[in-house]
Amino acid sequence: MTLDVMDGIYARMDDDTETRKVELVDSLSQTEIQKFFSGKSVLLTGATGFMGKVFVEKIIRVCPGLKALYIVVRQKGTDTLEEKMEKYFQHIIFGRLRNSQPDFARKVVTIKGDLKNERLGMSESDRALLINELDVIVHSGATTKFDEKVSVALKINVLATRDLLDLALECKHVQAFMYVSTAYSHCYRKDIEEKFYDAPADLKIVHDMIEADTMNELGITEDAVKMLLGKWPNVYTFTKSIAEDLVRHYGERANFACGVYRPSIVSAAHSEPLRGWIGNNNGPAYVFLGTGLGLIHTSYYLNTPMDMIPVDFSINALIAATYDLPERWMKEKRPVVYNYGSSTIQPMYLDTAFEYMRDEVERVGSKHVVWYPFQCFCSHKLSFYICHILFHLIPALLADLALLATGRKPRCLSLFWFGTKHLDKIFYFTNGDWRIHVPETMKVNDRLGPEDRKLFQFDMRGFDWATFIGWYVRGTRIYMMKESMDNVPQMRLRFRRLKLLHYGVFIGLGLLLAYHAYRLLSAAMIF
Image (cartoon, rainbow, N blue to C red; front, top):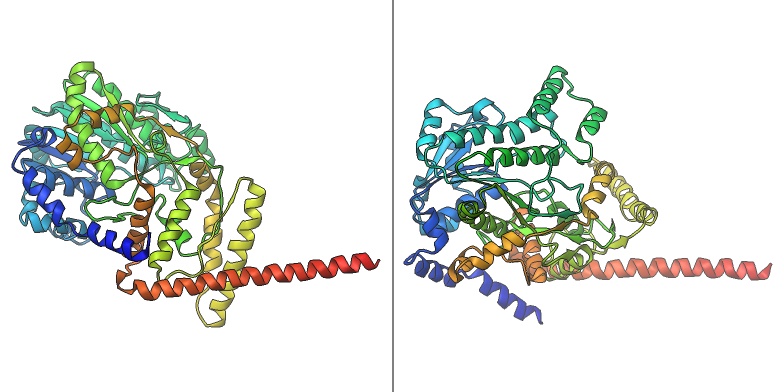
């Protein structure tokens, strides 16, 4: 397929006229999911985060009958809560919503709170309002730092979940409580089923850990943390597993449906609210960026599937699962789990993803590309570390010498050592070989009507990874590097020159090595 043809396809994808027409028709007849949320008040935590923004945009835009969306927002800095929310609604991802519903913000009710504080840091008047109004609670707020201070992670991820469940028990009309966890909450297992697993600690141990961590200014020692975490690799997965268990225990006695939603690694948007939009720099974003810019050239990789899902698919699955939850609860009378991932239904492999990514980088280029992207995948750690020295350490040293020679501050070696320090974590999640099983979530998709499957697309079966990674590369260029697409022709030419330079250098090095090998062989034959 020629570049001109591909450009035409991208142009048609960027034209959302047809999409707007579909939405206009759909608004005349409510789908089942739209009917479920019609007239309801929903509470969302984590609204200012990556997934939270997409949830807010989607549910308001596609569920016009929604009565109100309550969001818990922490006030920090000098901005008032009103000023903070005004900036929030000016975010680029709300552009489409602003065009179709200029007054959409009136449906959003801001509740001042802080998940780190007791009783969620809410005022009694706000709490009373929620008790009287709420129909659905979606708890997505969390600290996702792997190395978060233990007491902070436990307060935000565990105690706040308990407090929200207590609030739900007081509410007069709540029908569903959905907790957004992670598919890796029990990542010591290789097969993650849609069921609850035993937690590593109860609330008494949680309180003891918080007390021990706060008594010492430096917190619990690293060795003590490792001992407490046991088979959990970090404090994030440890706390999420405990929170899941709270949902299970509360759900066994609640008179409303309780569920856990476990997404795998959430990446760029497939199509909504903006194709290729990247709202955070976690997960694979930095790997894609560094590889695409020609900075990362080797990986320790055991050819295991990587589980990645687009953020809009993940939010669509969350909304659909929340819709399904009360009906499933009526049948099963117990708390339930919905997994969402790609590894068991449409797996992607790192080496294949790199090929798709390199093809797209060649198509669009970038002024920030420093070398032609190539990648050596190593299945043995020794060979990886040799390549790590050749392709990362030596270039970083040379780059810092060049920076020093031009009077600039060296920084490449520090980045090299930072990355090297965290290689064990990268190895763990790159080669985890997890299988995220999703039968219940796929049943939800299969039960939806055709209009709901169109509005809330999340079926990864048959997913086109090549096209998606192309959008991902463009999203990285636009949203992470803030580089316009206007300079693509010039950047393609620049990329071709880097490619010629790359092959020229390697051919030159190959000839040099061959020459010296010939000299050594000739000398050996003389003797």
